[in-house]
Length: 496
Image (cartoon, rainbow, N blue to C red; front, side, top):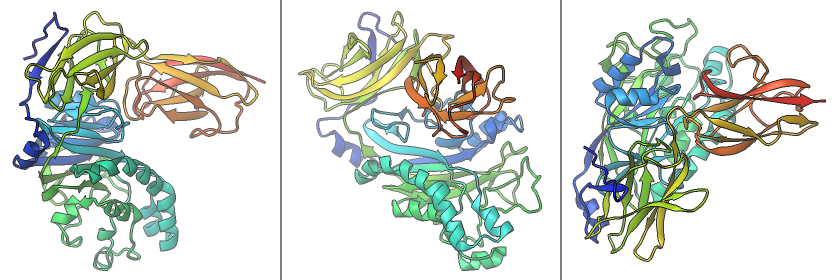
């Protein structure tokens, strides 16, 4: 139960405080068993109308944390069915709170496994096309060309996503990286496996090499080291199961990687029938099988941090703010208007001060907009901060253009507020009167999961043809999470 203290504007729900020797205490506590799952649910399970089966599969796997791909803005619905926390920006759901502190930038989040005890989670969906294994098996692509195509298509993006994880790994934080990598493991294309499967040649697939070079362990293959005896195919049960084309290439492209003090103890495939899966759900809702791995995890001690529950919260609803603090006298957390710097609520961490806990802020009566939650010591020195956007119920995204009439090579400058905050929300430029399903996209780009931000669209955007656009009337659409469901639009014109 949450109890909001209206007079103070916040309440403290202690999760078990640590002494001044908090990190040492956290390290001496027993390991945690954690089940981590990766699951591509195929356009939000809309192709099979199987959202109930998605929930059933996660329940059957008894997963604690799930990195999802293609949730199509249905992530919160799935989390609510399971009673899980959700991070739309990471496409992750979890039994444990998911903290996205300042600096994580949508690349990773903490899993709060206990008071002052953390693991980290990252999740990806690397580009599907061109799919190199099809070209290798069905078109005779050479090994050299296959390696180059993987470098051009996937490795660069993966390296960009791995870079923000290095400080976590250096600090000894157990870190999981789930995803549909759209690339096999070189450990599945060994000479014995190639001969058994009739593949053209062994190959050191560079995505898997890159992950191992970054100190990650392929949890399924660690438990099942023989790719002939246990191929563990995740692509594909069919689209939908059991339909596949005669030229299909079956492979393992969905992974639960782990680094740091996380020892895999089990690795299972979740899918459509007992010949291909350890856990069976019928009918199967996706075109990928899921993977669930069990780990013995030694959580890392928390740094000083403060994190709101999500990037976006509803005005009038309690706002959970998690903290880990040194435990010194006078420590407090302030809720500060981002635009004005005005403090609207300030809450002490207790007497004696708590090192770990949850502040529950009462947001009734606050204006919608961006706020900082700031952890301060007794001398008002900032220790950590996070940002959250409070949004009124029913508030639609607000788009603003610097100029709604473009001339010459002028680019389209956009600001937005109260965005949905999903990982793959996107802007698309269309001819006026055409929607995202029927219209030809003139240019598009992601919002990077930001609830509030600004960007520029022009000739360097994806899908962009010749720039400037031909003269005429256009619309800018904001669409949800890689889907063609669009929330709002704004007209603009191009003149010759």
